[in-house]
Amino acid sequence: MTPRHQRMLAVGLTTAGIVLATALTLRALQDNMMFFISVSEVIAGEYPEERNFRVGGFVVEDSLEIDGLDATFEVTDLRCVMSVRYTGVRPDLFREGQGVVAHGRMGDAGVFEADTILAKHDENYMAPEVAESLATHVDQQTASLADYSTECEPQ
Picture: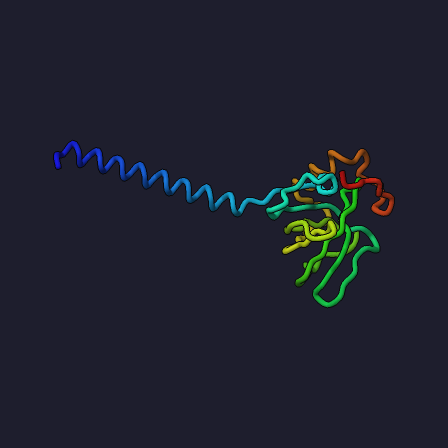
């Protein structure tokens, strides 16, 4: 094999290796990517059906039902409300009226099956995605959590 052929083979194998490594990296990142979707978008059916995603808002007052490690509650973006079911240890700051981000996917009967829930960690913090979602759907941030519209229906 001539030196020219050896160089061409080395360049070809190096290029193939770089392409393969890039493809594997992009595939791994895509599998771990999780989308944030507002409650209103979930109710409208605008969510990935075969993938996990995050939904955030406030836990609706008087909606939290706890049975051991099982918890069922409703989350609102102050426009629409959806049910969430979670099994596991809940964060210490998780309670009604507080901000929450749930990671999971839609289950049967339109109930969001959360794998993980995150509660806001102080009175001033709100996840940027939650704040942006709420800002697009709410004119007044001071609205009572008990006085939200329930007229959001699946489309």
